[in-house]
Image (cartoon, rainbow, N blue to C red; front, side, top):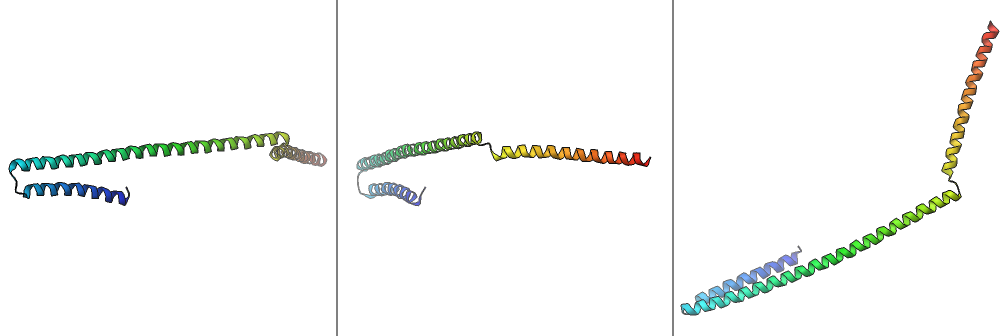
Length: 147
C-alpha cells in the first residue's frame, strides 16, 4: 500500500476510537441519572455502529470497483498481448514462406556449396586413390627391374 492510504486508514481508525472515547467520557462525566445515562450511551453506541457500517460498506464498494477495474485492465493487456503475438506469428510465417519461395526460384548458395563440397571430396578421394595406385605401380616396376 502507499503511504497516503496507510495514513488515511490510520486517521479513520483514530477518529473512530476518539469518537467512542469522547462519547463515553462525556456520558460518564455528565451529572445524569442512571436511566438517562444508559439511554445516551445506547444512542451513542448506535451512532458509532452506523458510522462503522457506513465505512465498511464504502470500503467494500471501493474494493469491488478496484477488482472490476483490475479485471478490465488485465483483460485489455491480455488482448493486446494476444494480438501482438498473433501479429508476430503471422510475420514469421510470411518471412518463412518468402524464404521458401526464394529458395525454390533461386536455389540457395548453401545447396550449391554442399554439391560442390561433395564433388570436390569425391575428386580428392579419386586423386588420393590414383596417387596410391601410381606409387604402387612404380614400386612394383622398381622391384621387377631389380630382379
